[in-house]
Length: 171
Image (tube, rainbow, N blue to C red; front, side):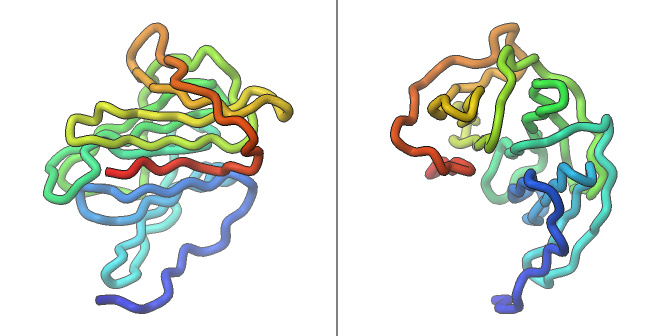
């Protein structure tokens, strides 16, 4: 078991997001301010840093499908605030720090502030996004269908909690 402190480098800006790649168990860190991505091996704390993200985007949140051990393929979904779209990248065998994203559906809203995004279930049945559209609005929780013409279905509103920064779904 590695007990060495994890080194992720300097985080600039206000939007950075992480998720674990189920392909090779590395932690992906997306730095929106620099439009870069890095991967860290949690076993030996080595990193592949500075991967380019194409096209230029402002990733607020990201999550992998098939997020459990011993999978051979996965899809990384990301919420892009530059285009207000769901973007995605298919991954198999190994994961690289570079990201080439394809366009999924337009969100139909303009998220503001923190965006939470997570995927759960062996069938990837729960793609959930937490977002608000104004500083005074409550956070809404949406079920996301990334390839639908109406990709967001309101699940509920989160009231009396104003300092949320992300969500995580228990597997």
